[in-house]
Image (cartoon, rainbow, N blue to C red; front, side, top):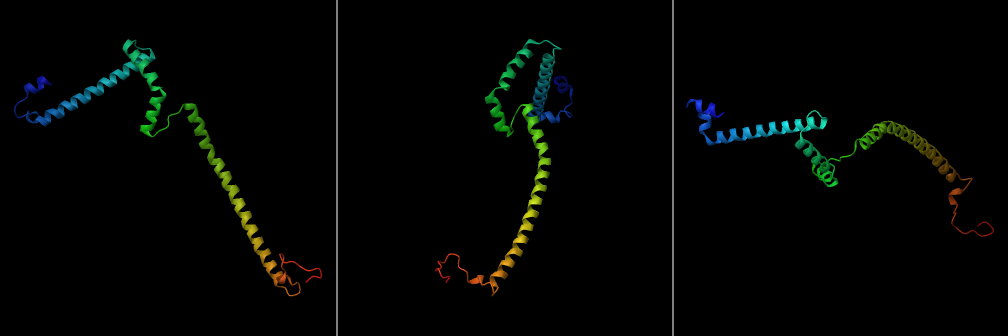
Length: 159
């Protein structure tokens, strides 16, 4: 890039004449360099863990990172800041199977609820008919139940 900058004519060098353009270019170069560096280090760590390449520093980095990644405090911090719950795959699969099976349970419970609601509606209709019959009998003049007092004390002669 230095050679390219030196060989540019003054007309082509208008972007670098401004200090902001040079800062933007510097930040862009640093960012791209960091990304390439992280990608290369990640690739070397993966190759070292697979046994393709033997790099002592990559092995040490992996050996140091795994225990800190499995630390309970680290996991709690990650869960707190990411609003996620980290769990082992076995527990996740058990929870997933349970959730997937809830559709069948829900359908069964809905069917049961509908049958119980129909039964309650039938009972209400029957209660309505029984209430009408009770009112009719209470008002019947020959039976005389409308004057009955269940809580009253009666004399021995029936009055």
